[in-house]
Image 1 (cartoon, rainbow, N blue to C red):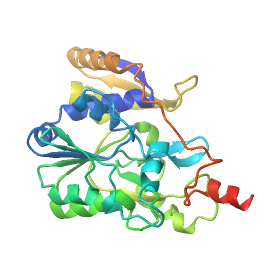
Image 2: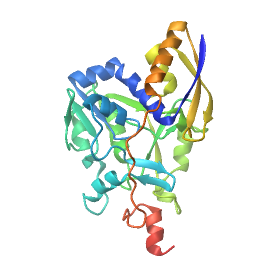
Image 3: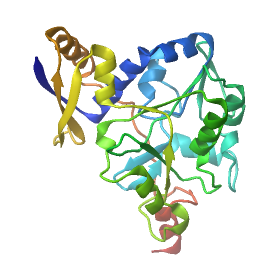
Image 4: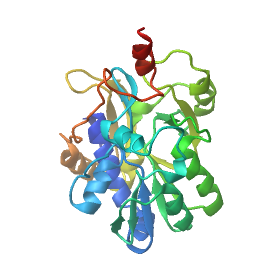
Length: 288
């Protein structure tokens, strides 16, 4: 049996969340150990499912906005509160940290990673997916080492905890992540729309819409088109194949995510923002 469906990027995020909730590794880590996740549009539905409510304050950090590469107002305010200068990513307080299912407030990333073991899980929303299934994450922290995700990668290599990378097919790029990472790099960028970023390849298990449908229903999903208008920008069209039971299950799951909406996004005002890494701010201060 075959069916065709359309998912907006936000609906895809909720679909992928549903599949993560079914993973035995996730269930075990949440019940018995540690689940840590970086606030993002890819993890906010997961936070909401665990907590029974949407997060207060920071729910997304880095953002690709119409005006350029930016950060949410809440995230930038949290960073600014730490004072001027380059900040150590290990001291970041933005990570959602669950220990045996209970949210641990205001724990620095370095302390979280120190506690993690091979049975625990870190979940990181990502920015780029290549045709081979490799994933990359943008970072803008000038401290070097790949920002917070660089700290996570280093700890993952040492401790071997589960590193889960939810990512929608809207983020598919037509070159390899390795090639893209060589072209990106904020230190060599002279002009940028917003904050110039580097791109770092991230090891781990990616979960996109194709993986999600396999986990949730057993159906095989094939991307056959993408794009859209009138609120469907960035959507993916999927052909679903499988038994009648698998397709029916996939369609039932799809109906539960249609119309999904993210929390309201708050971006800083470019006329008053003081982010020293943003080229829009630099150009404004130069009068350019």
